[in-house]
Image 1 (spheres, rainbow, N blue to C red):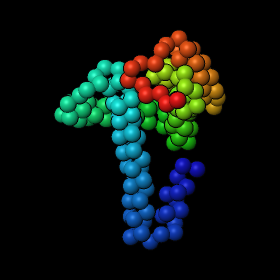
Image 2: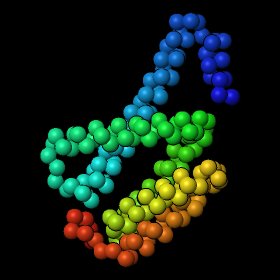
Image 3: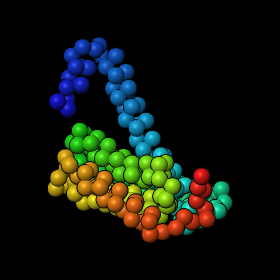
Image 4: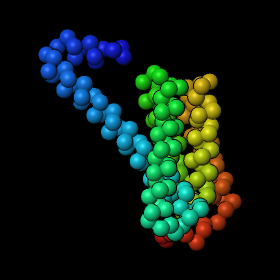
Length: 170
């Protein structure tokens, strides 16, 4: 099934158009990788690193940290791609990883008691559970991960207070 697209391209298209089709596939892959690297590093930098460690950074420090985080995301993504070589399983893992953001996102939007520490703890704990369980139960690893994310969000948010940097609308 993985080679079927390539077989169809080679069987139907003339040689000049085959090159365009392969270039299109490469462009789609590069665009997806670019989005993952930039989106992930920007999220970590703006939502985790700066609020927790350096709220005020000079522009050159911000740029350097963004470069380091982008390189780190590239290494992590390449490592995951080498470990999970099945494209379908890798896509499912990416979707499950995105689900780890849901408790913190919905909590922040719908529950005024949600704190920054609760959101961060929820996201990190959900990711740890997801990646710990995926080798053993890959098809349902998102369920316990999601439940842990909700539980940690509620527990930590109830246990902590809003920091002065959090903006709460009434």
